[in-house]
Amino acid sequence: MTNKAVVVLLALMSTPLAAQWLNYPTPGLPRTKDGKPNLSAPAPRSADGKPDLSGLWVISAGPGYLGNIAADLKPGDVQPWAEGLYRKRVEDIGKDDPWTVFCLPAGPRQLINGGLTRIIHTPLLMAILYEGPYRQVFLDGRKLPQDPNPSWMGYSVGHWEGDALVVESAGFNERSWLDMGGHPHTESLRTTERFHRRDFGHMDLQVTFDDPKAYAKSWTVSFGVTLVPDTDLLEYVCNENEKDGQHLVGRTSGEKQVKVAPEILARYVGTYEVEPNAPTPNVGGRVLNVTLSGGELLLDMGGKGKLPLIPLSETSFSPRLGGTYEFVTDDKGVVTHLLVHSAEEGVKAVRRR
Image 1 (tube, rainbow, N blue to C red):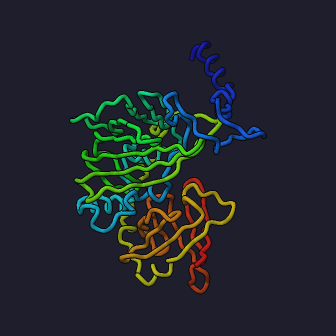
Image 2 (image 1 turned 90 degrees about the vertical axis):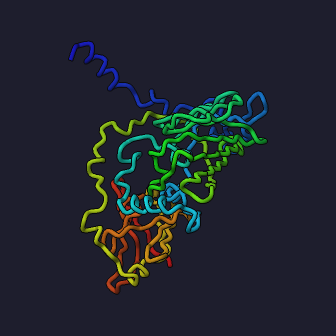
């Protein structure tokens, strides 16, 4: 290494964290008398009187929908080939997930799980920047392309309906999944998003999925979006120092043979509450509901999702999202709590009923 390179390296190593603007006050953000962000202030508007959607937001429909985007559909709404592929991917515990395993773009999954997302809103174009990919939403009156070259993030155009910006997207390739469970889609997928900024710090978002080649009907997921003040969007490169993929092999041959008797599964049905002060990023809330349907345990997080719990043993199950779930009994065989094991943490949820 040359002396010049050493000097540059040392300079970079000594750069303070503040240089990343992680604590830089957001310009133009309304504040209360004590200097805290006032997220309930009126929504900003552009020169044409329409709401300005610009800002740094957390876009997430929650882990329930992230795990099972089609949870609100009825039996028969998912076409047999799509249901079969979804079940295979769930039972393989997502070992072929193009996003989390192979570091490819999330595709339309990003619409409900963008994470930290910056929106740059101009009169003719809205740019949506995620930590990895980006989207361009054209607001200049153009129509969607008739025969586009399929891409990971598709093509998007928008128009106003009152104070709601309606974004229509199409032209997705079919290599991505709609959720962590593995619901597929085809190149016929079209999505419609409705952005409505209620006030300075809160936005309502509705996302409608329509893919007649995979689903018998369209459906809509609605959730709230919150502004994140006084911080910045950092670069994220999934494939940088990636060491997980080689270990994500799905269930072992022994785990695939596990069959849990219905009477044992019935013991696990109930409502479990995460202990106070425990972190909950991998369980999506403080209340976990476990139900039994068709001989299979289902998990919902915060009332959303209905994720299949795939048995790994008589007491341990995987919902594909959020690690391994282990049911714990007392010396009388009564289930007392649930342990959620993941690489980041261990969380205990006490059975309430």
